[in-house]
Length: 312
Image (tube, rainbow, N blue to C red; front, side):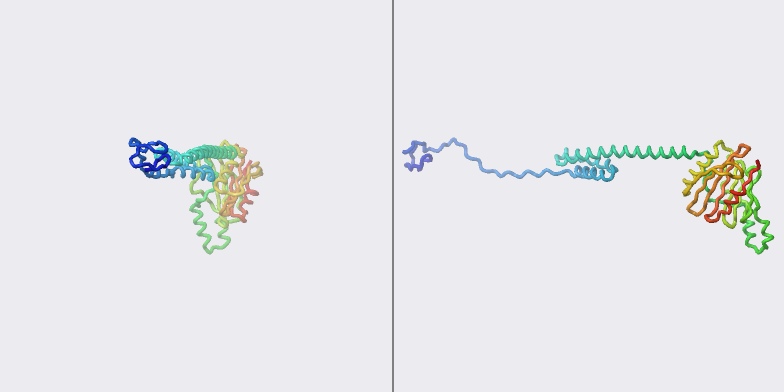
């Protein structure tokens, strides 16, 4: 046998090496080397999808001005809780999503409150600019549903007959109004008595209306029992006209029948023009004079502007 220390060959059974004296007897107490055991590969840690989704939605909210920030915040919170329970990756993304979406949500709410506040401020300013009175809807809004009297129907049917011009001349009105409303001489057109379908409120204590069958123009003369000034009523009228879609709404101070009046007018999409005058008579009562006529057919306007009279 060979000596494990120096390699010298010795007789079988020898207890020690003849050359170096090293023991040739194996150590029976030495522990055997363990056999190699393969180590299994550890499973890869997953990334939580909700964490990533929350971050993505939060980042998208930056482009969308914070409108989806609440969704991003909810997804990020749920993802963070889920990742903790399942020992998954993505917690950092969830925390980032929570921070971003929280900031954007606060900014969105702030901008929303600011916008609502600004809107109501503009509405309040408009109300201060155009004060409204109780019958504004009934009185200052141009009506679209109209109705003539029974006399109108009779006169319309007469117009279709083959009467002479002399016999038909007595059919139509020559003036509209009375001592309270004032009067307008109807020197041109084919005028008949006219009334509103819905009637008027108690604040209208006197009124007269006429319609020109040839142009569709309408003249209205009203006496109002209100405490507002002519300026306030004109502003209310302009506000109502704008709300009804009128364009180029304008006001001016003019003379009507010798009185200082406030005039307002505007044009509508159907081609009709509405002109109103407001003034207080010598009896202290408010007058409202209106004329509605198609664009390009302003003869009714000139009848009122040049021919309105109210005895002083």
